[in-house]
Image (tube, rainbow, N blue to C red; front, top):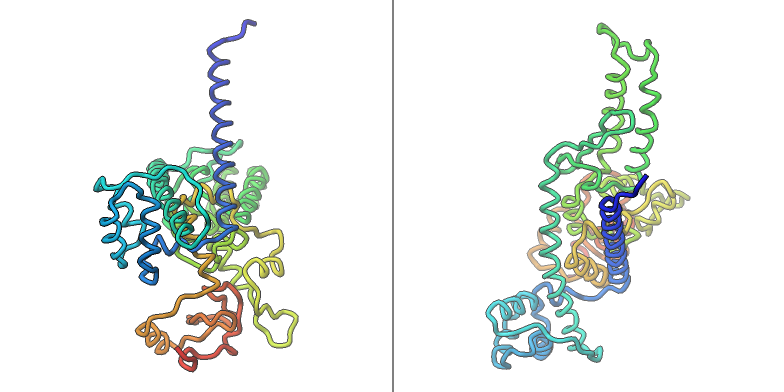
Length: 378
């Protein structure tokens, strides 16, 4: 039979596009792993940093905007209430500066700040493109999933946070969610062969095998849905909490994090005592290999370049918590806050047992032994 030339070309183009996509994904995964393994204080350029000296701000702005007049850079450096990233964007929008060419600089304080600012400017531009792709993907989630099993029974997944339906490619499942979904798919053939007595309902006619299987699928998915998130909701969670401390080994999905919090024990003189354990150590003690953090490949689809820099800054700043404002101290005292036994961060217990996971250092401490917030000096 003669070979079709057009079909072969299409297959070759699709294979080349797939290889290119795989290479790009691998590159992004390596970039994410490398950045989070070497945290840096990007909050100096992403957030207002009035503690920086005028010379350090001027040198960083000059590194990113070498064509701008020195007088303009000095006036811009005086705006300590604005982040350096916002100042650079304003200078470039007004046409007063252009992007610098690549050059090697020594890793001194000012040069390191300039390098971080240049990387943040580049990540900001890439973040806009990343968010546009996410919005385009979200627009495709409106229709229910058309993916069906081999037995022609649909498995409709939805985000447990925003309740949006979508295809499997638009959703992120943790290791527990994937395992439970595989179990559901394996049980479909047994549900389709259920005997008559199992399909009967009290006061109602017996269900057909197909209706019975659809009912069992709907019931079994209740254990899967808590571990299913869309990319937008999972990104919001990861960027809104600090319990993972910006490390890949502790980035569990919200449902797994709640399960680990519930599994923590703070017992005195007992082998079950988990005081001082982090989330990954609690997982090793309780769930083992059944629970794993969110894989790095999924995180590259969830976190943008600027998000990675913020997580890197979080990992850097967790070792040195910032001082609290006096007004916030008074509110925490009124709410009965207590200090973490390891990092001194103020925590509030809304209910549950005395084993509390600190939101700053991510370690378990005993609430009954923790010192009240008002008894420590400011």
